[in-house]
Length: 370
Ligand SMILES: Cc1cc2nc3c(=O)[nH]c(=O)nc-3n(C[C@H](O)[C@H](O)[C@H](O)COP(=O)(O)OP(=O)(O)OC[C@H]3O[C@@H](n4cnc5c(N)ncnc54)[C@H](O)[C@@H]3O)c2cc1C
Image (cartoon, rainbow, N blue to C red; front, side, top):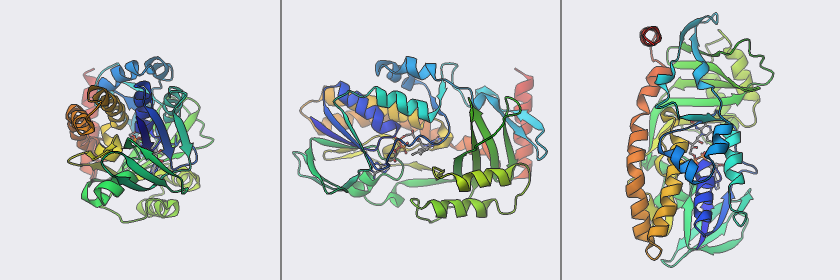
């Protein structure tokens, strides 16, 4: 079957691999002009590890493993360590694997079937599903017909917008914003990844290998802005930290403002009752974003891509039955991942000074008992 995948993030690339391996003729379109690899390293957990194995990429993933999260320590304004973040707070099992986004994107792209096409700078402008196929008009003006369309275009999915309606119906804001930017020329003095809290805010440095990222998070109610506008994102960040000159906050804000590939978004989830309509189906954040706090967004994307390809194999002549099976089998993973997200906010960004102290006391006690 001719399949169009919209988005070449972790969900789109994974769907490209699994659907291509199942013998489909797959085309992926990515709106950006290159693979978007900024952001912090990614965790692959639980069933996604066995899916990665079946996709033939587990060894490559393990070969690029990093230990960024294991090095997190909460510090005071003078940079003194207050408490470490024990790995029991962010890992389910010692098999959980953390890999830089750039490495995972490359591993997945290299695993695509050579017949699968990947076109950058392209996106869907219009879809028309007539029951037997989907006619697509692209932003470039090109028109093609496909058997199915897979929307893997992230939390702000344009495919979802075209087929299911405005994202405000499905997006649940968890009360936080996150920014990640390259921190150039950072000479790491030791192996620590320091994180500094003020009530409702976190500023930190996440270093791995020879790279470092500025991490800025803050609590806020929903902010209306054009999420395609980097200048608006940077202004929101500057406003959020305007009263803070302590620790390394000015340096981290400078890095965020200077980074043309800044990652900035609300920490939100997507709750969509049904992930498919007609011949269009959603995979990854587009359908069931669990938020960065879950640490499971990429794992969900990989299991989703695998289960979708399996369901299409099980129901070659019945797309609706295939999509129902995909949702039925993926739903428990989604429910679990979305359910684990909320405590992450209290751990990383306590809302008050008392909550910061309570978090630190709890983590100290945990470390003492190890
Ligand atoms: C640049 C970036 C950095 C990220 N950094 C982090 C991070 O540090 N920590 C974290 O927990 N999560 C991060 N995420 C989210 C994380 O990647 C996802 O939760 C998870 O990997 C699921 O991936 P996904 O493919 O569903 O969505 P995404 O990773 O968001 O990928 C969606 C892809 O679709 C593309 N796209 C968007 N709109 C269109 C369109 N209209 N047409 C075609 N293509 C389109 C995007 O450019 C992107 O490549 C980041 C996402 C992005 C895009």
